[in-house]
Image 1 (cartoon, one colour):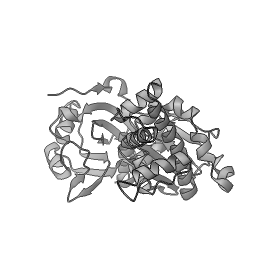
Image 2 (cartoon, one colour):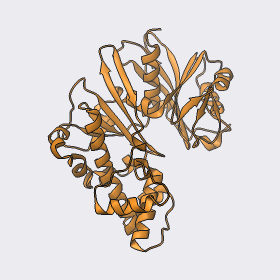
Image 3 (cartoon, helix red, strand yellow):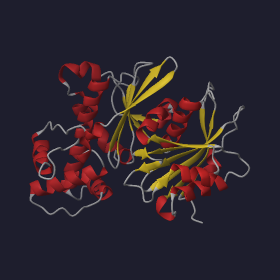
Image 4 (cartoon, helix red, strand yellow):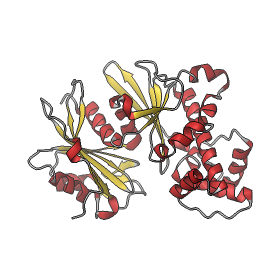
Length: 345
């Protein structure tokens, strides 16, 4: 049976909760599935605690059910009745619709295979929004001078990955409400002459050019390819990681310019979202590419473009933007979402 790519169970074991309730939480993407045993306790000082955690390569397994069975087999006598899966996409007739997954995921089939009482689905960025309430200071890196937001105010979570995800967490007297958005599909609004030139090229393929056509892993490649055309050179890089590495190494001028455009546009779009949703509690940036370019992002035009919103600048100057560096954000969020729905049952 395939082994996990990364095992952290030995270092992630935590003293069991006084009133133990156990949940299997999974954060599922096209490349990796992160699975955890989570202890949840409504009203506790730490209502969500990761007790055991593993990371699996999806390509090593015939389906998500096999991954979860492998994980559950490591739990010994620990009884688990419920599960929550955080994943991009949506559910139709009990099946997760996400073209980036390597296999079909049927919630009913997996629930029966594992003998679970319930197995539920939550959108990945809705889960990320729930997770932010459990982050500690060491889990984030500030990207703006403002270090703390307004207590009890809404927060925004944004992340470039295969697409561009965004969600707003709104605290209430009885918990929190999460507003899932489709900000990645809003129209790209260029702010520089170079971005206008890139837009003209991208519009040849589709009249609607959304934000994630540039602000995502594939979007970075789109920007690089367009810039190569504008520079009159051949585009030789076809993967986001290759473009990023060439930019950081300084070995490809078009790749470096593409990363410059990416960082500046990220600041501009996030500033727009702050104007739209008023997240005075702060902004959290999540996504695999961002920690890798952390230093580059901080020295780029990101902050300048974030603040460049005319009369709204004094407001944005007080909104902290934080880069999340927490490998378990998805499983924390899936468990937090489950707790919000079923915590008092």
